[in-house]
Image (tube, rainbow over the protein chains, first blue to last red):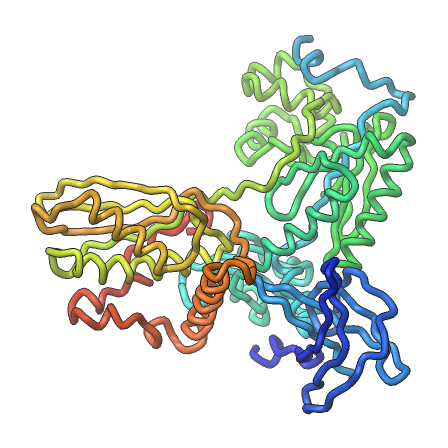
Length: 89
Length: 430
């Protein structure tokens, strides 16, 4: 049962972000679960979306990391905002 | 004749397109779908949401489509459900999460029209007449809303499109999951009249039994039965059903927030020894407030009012209440308000035999924002998060593993098991 409830593809990440005066949040860099740090080269798209792979929903940022497009989700739960990413696999 | 006028009868011309465009949007298997969204490994497995699995009297609150063929039904006891489907995965309800997704769902609907009327957490009517001139526009809009809810929230919904609320609701039940069903003034006899009478909103078990007894089996049978006969059978309600079945419901979509059925959460106890001082009451009220606050957090609510009830040892009973400056689900705030009420209203002329505390005028919980200008808000936000952390620790390791120091100050009163003793569950969840 516990194994079924474990989210193997959901990785909460620490994010360095910029909050603009108009309230828009832009992620600048993040720390992956293994401790490696990645710079975000740019944000391609922002929209509300669900992550069926990792489980959950929020604001989905499509970001460019080392030339590749990846999703980052800004999730809000019980007043706490957290970033998560989908693990490959 | 009167009922036809009241319901706007005659205003709907068969070939005209000048009729209301109403959507009824229903999230499929709401609780179970939200859980599966958050636990992707459960997809494809029989899943139900049910009252606490530790409690033998827990019941099924929701199920997914895979659990349905096993005969799993809402309201069934957990042990019965497990008998029918040994592989059934039963998860405890997470009301704050459901409230959150309900609000997000409603937010999408409100982008299209202000006329959104919630019917529970997972259903809403929308009057989209103003933005849908042509009949097909409402269907296309319904399809767009379905896609958006699926993409943005990861949930599927069924939508009924019709010219009145009753048929719109009926339409959302016809095809599930993830479908749109149109019931128009021109097709309703074909689509609706062959359905069982029990599918009509307002036909409960008792009415269905009575209808069956007189040979009225379908919605078409209701529509074609003389209205005066329906009135003889069910009084005014019979006339309403006759109008509903004929597509003559003209009730407006009333905008508003979802008002929860639960009005209050409380807990009271007859103490192991009589209370003789503020210090005694302090211990018991904190103990009770902890369980009340935890219960409120379970259902995602905060209280705008605190009530205390007191019974003296000569069995005289009374209660007092106070309004809070802002809603709370923090145990310490509830307990302190309770203590203020007690100090103001009781002089310890006699010892107290029992005491209770209740959070009332419940409103959906919204977290305190961290605004740097207001230090209190930051403190409060921290207190709220701490309460959730305590809930989590207790859930994982047991309720008694973490307790307030104040409870240790009296060997007898501090041992009172407020969590399991005499909890007054809120209406609809007991």
